[in-house]
Length: 237
Image 1: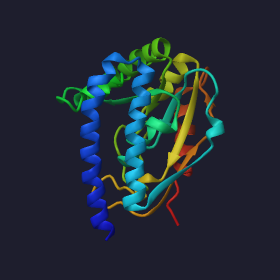
Image 2: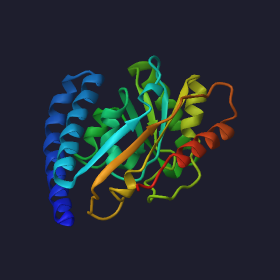
Image 3: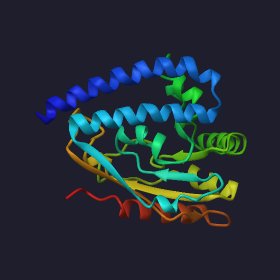
Image 4: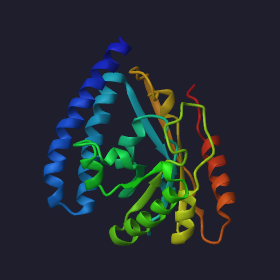
């Protein structure tokens, strides 16, 4: 039964997202950037409602008090499923996120992220990709008043796995003299990166204490944040 409900949810999610995407692309050119972010949150709320009703999958958030009340900051967040690509629209202050530039070139699919002012990078460019994050991140923070979210592993990782974190998020925070907010979650155990099955349960999201980036050694800073995130990713049960 859970497998069948997972398929029903996936089909419903795709239909809803595509339908909403059409409206989003029509309406958003007439909205300021924060209005576009709010509108994307509507898509998330409906998706999570369907996920709860059909699959019995909900979430909790710990540490909201750790989000700085003022300024724009950098969020480093684990990426292990599709769940967080929806969740980031409602869990945090208005933000833009870093993604593969190639996605922006896909007709229709890329239009939404373009309107949301996401940061597109060429991951094959090596150091050039880091420069793109620094340049575009500075612009989004200063011109839009946006927070920046980086998935530091650069791609979705299977639950329980990790690899060396990229340096762009830490470098951006150091450059902008702002804070890094680490975020851990275990969504990959419930909504795996591959396959249709969504498991019943509660995803745990933990927002960690902000870390000052100004004046810090970037490698040391990055390693500290990675240790905290990986230590707070907990397998359910």
